Amino acid sequence: MVKIYYTNKFISSYNKLPEQIKIKAEKKEKLFKVDPFDPRLDTHKLGGKLKEFWSFSITNKYRIEFEFLENKEVLFLKAGTHNIYRND
Image 1: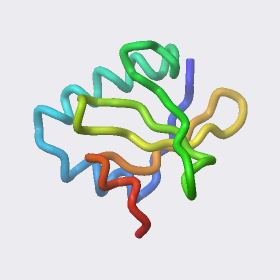
Image 2 (image 1 turned 90 degrees about the horizontal axis):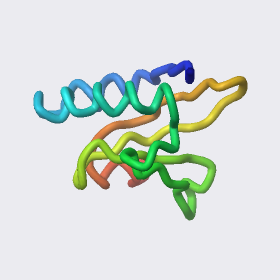
Image 3 (image 1 turned 90 degrees about the vertical axis):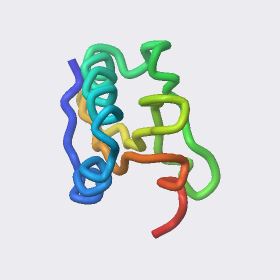
């Protein structure tokens, strides 16, 4: 089982998601905790300036960006559309 930590930026971006997307995100998070590479998540490594980070799909439009830590620990960084990959 994966332990998930949340950045303040993740919490802020998550709170801005539409309610139906939050419901789907919670279901995907449950899958993620059991297996971060479950095929239903479409987990993939990011490239370019974000090459140390990963992402999985909530829907075709919405994603969660995260970072693997140590000992089955993960840090959720941001949630949203592909715009989350832009620099802040």
